[in-house]
Length: 272
Image 1: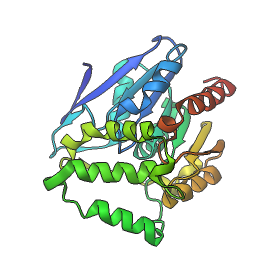
Image 2: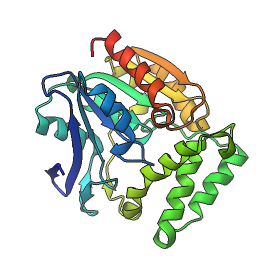
Image 3: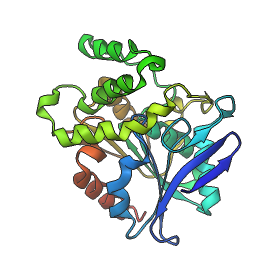
Image 4: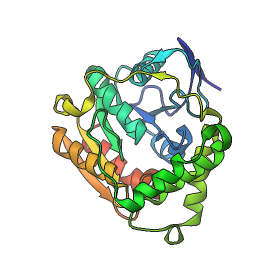
């Protein structure tokens, strides 16, 4: 299993596709691992070099909890390790925040940017409605030191179901897949480590990103992500924005075929 040795970490990554092809760097959501991109890797690796990795405290990556780190620097170190000069960086949720930070920290390394239900570093907090707040409170009431599996299951279901629909209306195979994707992170429930943010934060700097951007969100995502989607769509100078119907926080997992077609068409349109 490939690992990149970094100060305080062994970064787990996978690659597929021709080394000489245009590169894509895929970064997963915080409720998943790089396995969330399995369907896209299979589809896109026919004519792209697909690189994906687990950030520290997720999946197959091991790290020293005491060592400070910057996720965007880890991503660039992986590109360096693989000899990739430029890539289209694709990130979901927490991975979307990392992707945005990469585009700001090293714009010369980013040919394109794709955000999926992304967080934006430094974005103002978005108030939750009472029902959603109660669901978050339920997650936070579980001590991860006592029952990390239950905490992660509740968190995963909260995001996978989203708002405006309930579990009974969702394909049970998708919910099972979402729960499966979160399982490897149980082992990391207590080892977030000393993560350092990009400074200045992304929220006030989005206009600096000149690369073509595809901004995606599920129509049933939670309010904070819908608001941040609107912020990205309005603030990125070269943004194409799209809401994916019938999905919430994991559209690439819930509707992989539709997601991959949309992504592939956008990549082709921009020669990426």
